[in-house]
Image (cartoon, rainbow, N blue to C red; front, side, top):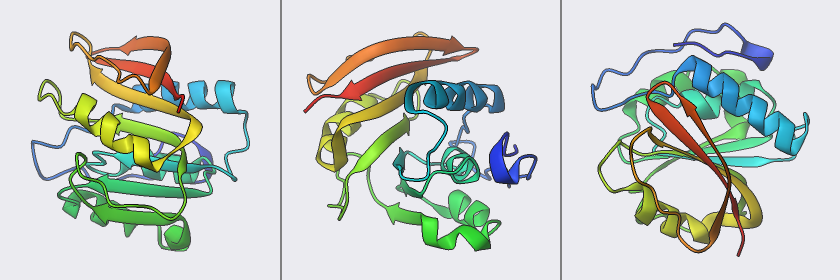
Length: 179
């Protein structure tokens, strides 16, 4: 597992100790960041990203490497992501970790422009977590929701699907938060 682009390209990350943590594949992360560049432009410095079900933290740390101004990682068991954050001491002011259940999020001071969510596959957590995320997203936020390629995912009414891509075992739903 490594950072695939930006300032820290090639930097190795610590693989998760738990078999329950399934990091987004490098090629999928690369494709998602290409989508982000296409939809948001190349300057991510003013954007705030939230990574729900952060696991290893690889996605949010990739966002830091690629220039996002601020990232928040949310996970109920953050031990794996905390190890990886320690590899980026110069970026500490850009990174926040919240230990929380994705279906019961704490309030935030500033809402997020981009959401990445990669819930455990086939456990029915994506839809309730998306409903809960509504209270922390800016209107118009770009949402990238990873599910297993055969998993049925109905977006709550506050989200409008704009695209869907498949990468190996993963399906990424691209949506806008419209409330």
